[in-house]
Length: 330
Image (cartoon, rainbow, N blue to C red; front, side):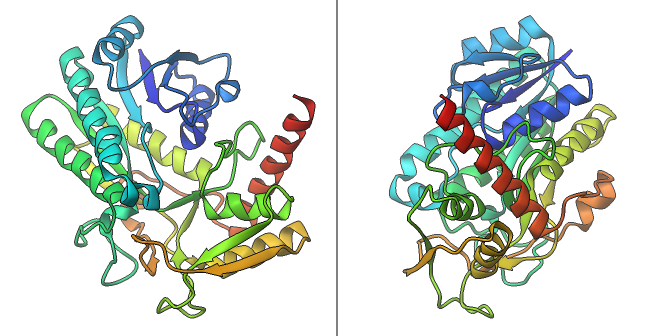
């Protein structure tokens, strides 16, 4: 048996591949390399360059490798971009996910783990936000993910097919062993952008909105370390293989930091000052969103190991330094 990881050459997907290989799983990756990078894929995993919307390719991979589970990361993730180009997001995140799900049903794959997002909640009325809170996304990105969640629920009722949807909060950090990190060019993750600025890769960093109803006026987010996140996927895979019912879980730490707090942490840990420019709010950004995480801790026996902002920032900085060394020697 094997696990198919879509988007396995990307940020979170590459960490998932490492965790699966560390556990002795056979891993096959499909990635179109639109944002993923080939060099980050370990030799022990097989990479098939292709698109999840190509059902003939996906079904051939599943049959060839005897795939029993799919962990689905492939998709577009930039909120402002989704507002500017919604049709692209509905096509890449929803239409292609539908094709992937159908391929799983056709080939008898019974276990499916979906990379969802806290953006499905929109502007929550209270924090921490629970899985049964109102779902009211503010962006096409959030809506495209919610639509896939709804498809999964319907498919699981109609077929011998069970899924776990994991709603990510803000993913950051890097592999503690230094094997992977956020390598996507032009990434928009706050901690990565701040680290790039600290290392001189960017001239400045922008803060989008300083008039939110938060203590310092900037957005508050729950930052989850990437290895902790992928271990939640591994726990979900074990849960499904042991007969667990389809379900949805938040992935976060139940504590949040503001944009300015994150920037201050990067400055302090890097020992470098850098220019911070204040800008207008971006469409689709809620003021604050923090995860209630008691459900995943209880049902999946998930216990985070890296739930510390300084640890996360230190890992991200080390990875940016590694990327800089690679650029100099390439």
